[in-house]
Image (cartoon, rainbow, N blue to C red; front, side, top):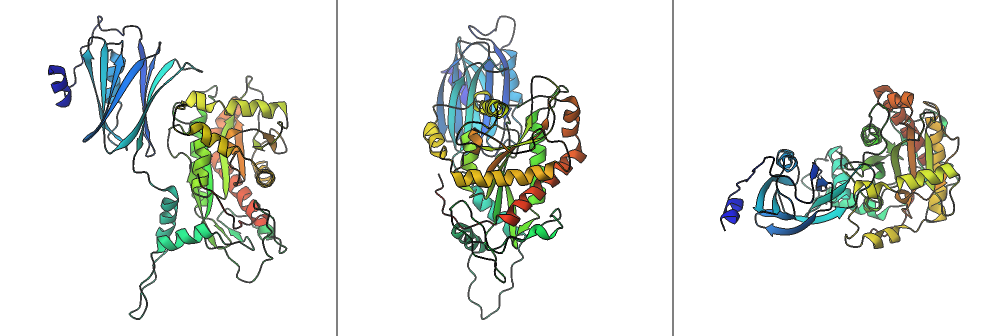
Length: 463
């Protein structure tokens, strides 16, 4: 009773010393990964841990009893690792609940859906006990993109005789959902191609739904946002490849995504605004199938996954672009690359017991010939621009079974910006000048794709 009273009062019992070592398992390190979408707490140990959880809704907090250990300095560090700006966690308390059980109490800022699970050793990690804390009230990402767009649109002054204006957010959502067909693709941007090739062929073009857009007509426009899903690879528990100088892939690709987002958000297609949507906007892990689901949820027109290549030796160099393959890989290197990237869930830490995870992955494994053909076109445009600012590893788009490219209705490519395992290219990836050049090249490639393949109306099943 006394222990329970102390815990409820917010007291922390930390009795540390040589005699208080983990029994049966040693806590190696602890980590906290804050993000608006969810916060993760990881406890890494040299043996598997057994834990029981209890969620208390008012005030919201999660109590986790870890069996078979006593307090040690690593667990004490967990208390101090929660930052004031964590979107979900208000603080963590830790105490010796019984002689062989440590209780963690995670105080929360709002109601959450907790997932507590264990991960077996993989890559550089030993056993991990993971707490994923998802907010119950999620923000609709499409609403956020549209609201952001409306900030750029000055409201028109109402007249006394005018009717009450419809909610502009509702109107733009309706326009985006209807997705009327575009008949031309005039693209503009501060970084847009300055040649006459920025207009679509007047005969129209064929898109994912197999329908042909009508020839360009006077004043033809689309009335919806053009959304580009940018997917910075890896993140959080998964650093991706690490260069000889210690550069982490997850960091350089996130920076590249931010630079590309700046360019996309100032561009237009056929007079309609573009917006970039990032599958992760901070240092946290997103499972592969969730990245695809996110892109489909915002009804993205394109999906571009950003990575930095790596190999066992420092010699390989140059950028590559990959698309999905319905059959075998286009080369042994492409097959190897897909297998490596598809292991991200194991390293990043996926809760395989999460509801519908297997079903959702199966539903997304429905690649279509049209999607792959459009992905190859997008990849070719990107390669054509990338070679203007750096070397190419392969001169054409490679294909393999990348899990992250399996949206059946979104042209999707994976860009390997350079070989982070090559010392010279690692320096380039850390160079602000090169990152800006690469972001410019990718922007030009996206606009060149839209110039020949205008966004079309298409029906989506959002899962």
